[in-house]
Length: 262
Image (cartoon, rainbow, N blue to C red; front, side):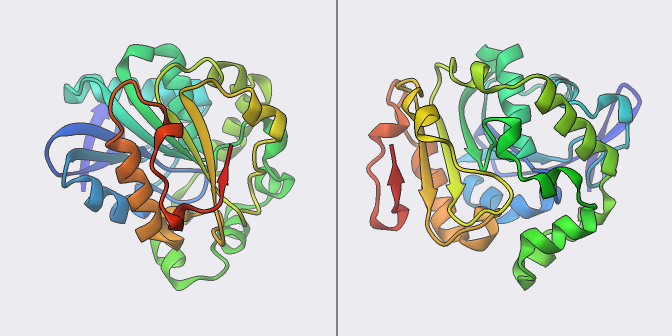
């Protein structure tokens, strides 16, 4: 296990590979651990980092730092302490929201972002996701899949306050207005069968700027990176290889990406 001290608090992370930095941020259920297959693929071209946010996994429980903006500051301090420059970001759920908050505060620090099952509004989060105990959420979202249950072994370590505080900050400060101003390549990926996060409305997706695009993966739920790692990792690799200046809309989509939503 790798860890650093940030302002006296333990922050757990893992790293693989060499090359340009890419950072993986987990969602409300789980920890860095469910990114392992994606990190292994990314590590062939990148230095891949995954860290546990405050209140999750093996990072310290710090209730004063559970809001989305404070989690973004955690990422900033982590990058500064590690001497990491401009990054690519892959975030899931809460991790995607933290990523967009980080971009809002430090826009020149991010090259591109892949946002997985990211709610565009507070209302896009199922009420069960906002209120149910963590153990119930883990069972609900995993569909009792052995692969997902193994990947979510750290879910029980989470502080329920970390979920509650992040939901409250999402409700108080809707990030979509900031997301829609992102000028870097941004790809939203959703599982068609995700019970926790609603897909973007046609009105929202129609308002996306040129550098932003979203896709829906058939027969996938809340954890695309675990449920279908081959398909997810191919998509991630193609997006990360997108030439500077090109929009995610310019990706040459393969048959397995269907369906595509504009």
